[in-house]
Image: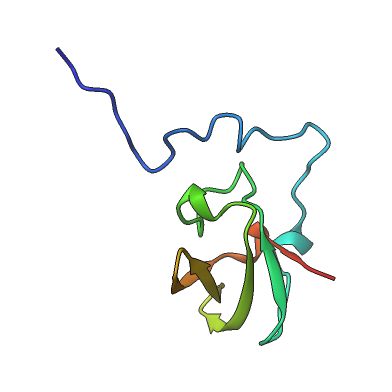
Length: 95
């Protein structure tokens, strides 16, 4: 009997369902974040590039720099601090 696939997108059907009013613009791809800023990680469902595991969806992180087109973030995962590299289209500024 075949085994069920458990790929990186497993369990994200409703989490990454796109709102019909949610459109992607060029400005979303060109967002700039300064070092020390706080950002909210909200993955845009129509862009698979620059996205990490879905466990980080909805978390708040600190910007620590840039790495190419991506933004370098520090996130607390359990008791450990982890470094993530995510494209700006998946980030929102926290006020």
